[in-house]
Image (tube, rainbow, N blue to C red; front, side, top):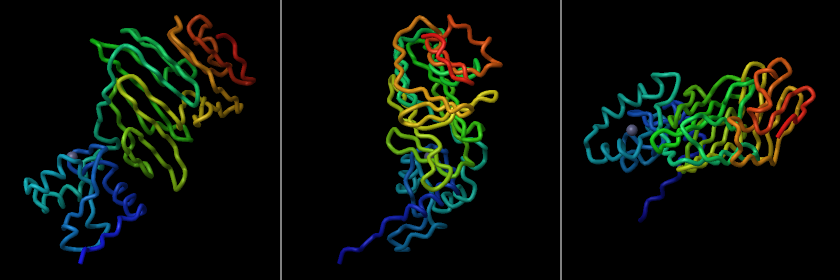
Length: 270
Ligand SMILES: [Zn+2]
């Protein structure tokens, strides 16, 4: 008679992810399988303490007996991503010399050279920026949570995230951060070689906070909304620049394609 094997419940999966710091217990990679340390065929049940996260490489080593159960148990007790406040660095495969950055229905399409282009800047600080080096597209971005603390960064294609978050999943090419049940803090779709879509998230710098939803960028201080703008191959360093009144001098009109100054939000130049 075939054996019935129930799926691991989503609550149990999340508990395992949280305990393991959202990555393989050996190397911290964000792609993993839920592994039964004592094989399921032996225990025939899902027990949260018997589950761990292994990346495909380390999972195969365990299957091939190149890692013992005992070694897995030791790694599970002290997961790689739990030894640091941020996750194991993951290198994104961006390439070439053009880039499409989408942020809340706004698009920045640009050919890129060795000098930085800055699709999104707050109070003069670029929070998404791109340049090329020897044919590689190097993408950087810094996202916050709703209180403005940094939770995720991409530094020249190297992705890391806070391992103390409530939940992080990286399924196919989509990274989702949650701060509670049905509370999505960030959702990013990576489409190398040249595209990134920030569908949800927060950006913050020196008193300014913006929330990104699939339809818009919402500047939280005055509830100004920026949506549906396409900036395509402009001769400016910056794409969308949002500043408050105190920082307006930091962004001269000649440097940005779209320049918003809050309170009240005025689209000054494009
Ligand atoms: Zn691994």
